[in-house]
Image (tube, rainbow, N blue to C red; front, side):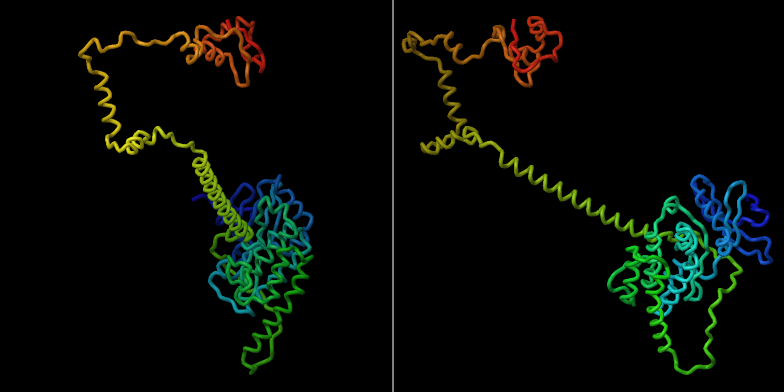
Length: 421
């Protein structure tokens, strides 16, 4: 096994939780504490992309010292140290726990109070620190942040609307009692006011977290009153109004760091799948449409059948009452033609002949050896096609080129008169 690495002579690396081109996240122990307190350490490797984060930590040093256990620069590399949260990770808690209305209100109110303390920080830090992977739930009613600055390049250009969408995602997850909850009209025990708050977060309508708290406080108080009415009226002792304190957490939770970093990615993937299915359906409809149109056009443009090919001879025989087939008639006619005449006197003395010259002039095309003297170039003609037409041999086009002083076969133009040798 490789030796355990010590950072800043204080933090002993136990396990690598995440490693990419942008950062590394370790699970370590603080050797300066008696109980070897478990901590998360984030190391930003790419200083070109990580310089805005480093500048933010240096500019807001006093504010961030109240949130982080430690952060420092070693050889121009930023290290952040975060204490491990107690409780269960958000995704595991929501998946395995059913919450009543009062517990939902407690968790959301605790979440809003936690992120309200981050309002003085830069937007990108607030957006990352309240991600789902940073949140744990304690005692079914309190939210604890790990404050692990786990960044992606897109987080450096996040907008206020993206930040509000992440808050809306958390409220929807808690009230929907599911990590994959969707905003619908009938979502568990959600009140119309909660539905309105989530939609306003998605629309980016709030200016700050305090505005969200103002809208949510009446919902929380109503749930608290309903919980008090459900309890027995007998009180054993005085009511304890002291705020809840976060219990100590001596051991780090054994869990993978990456859970569900951003529900928006899930929404985008579902939307992308819907668009993909719609595109495939549209493509299939277009293919069927064009195939149908092509088939119909082939049927409509099909030429009429030749009557000679449809059995004209059969029709003639049926009209005359003759049941012989055309094949039998051809046989008899062939036999008659091949019979040798017995009487030479019956043969005609003269056989009428036709003038071969006049017949050739009427029916035969001009011979290939006697082409016309001139030819007018038409659209689409080439020297090869003209030679083929005039001589019956396309390879004789050099003769035409020589007779017309043509050096470039591509210089033909429509209407040009060529001399045909």
